[in-house]
Image 1: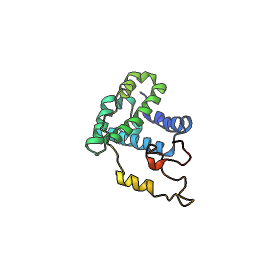
Image 2 (image 1 turned 90 degrees about the horizontal axis):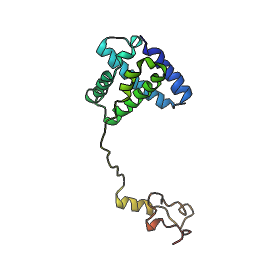
Image 3 (image 1 turned 180 degrees about the vertical axis):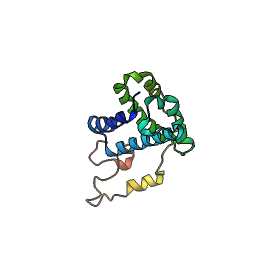
Image 4 (image 1 turned 30 degrees about the vertical axis):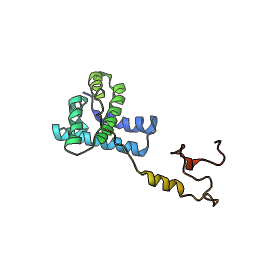
Length: 165
């Protein structure tokens, strides 16, 4: 029997904190994902998180947790995939620490992220882009060389007086 608690603590202190030098936001996001997972498992099995064993976190339980996130908590597919990334990171670390659970860990690592449709993001209309490009006054020193040309290098309004024609 191998309890998860010592590995979980080492994952946060050693792996994320010292080896990866993860940002506080990354650590907080991973913490939240794993806290939700442990709470889900406790609710399903009645086993306290401090007493959980690796066999309690098999691929079926992880898949049920991911479905729970979407179906009952209303999380988006992207949020589900971010939570899965945190779980996979923990299990990748655990694979090195607990080779005796290699098969169980590999099955969890084999859970693929869920596909989702990427929305096209459009913030500005054509007239809004033109208005933005026309905003700097080239007659004033503040307006010289400050034309926002980086997203639209082919627009004539972006032509620099020093650029070759």
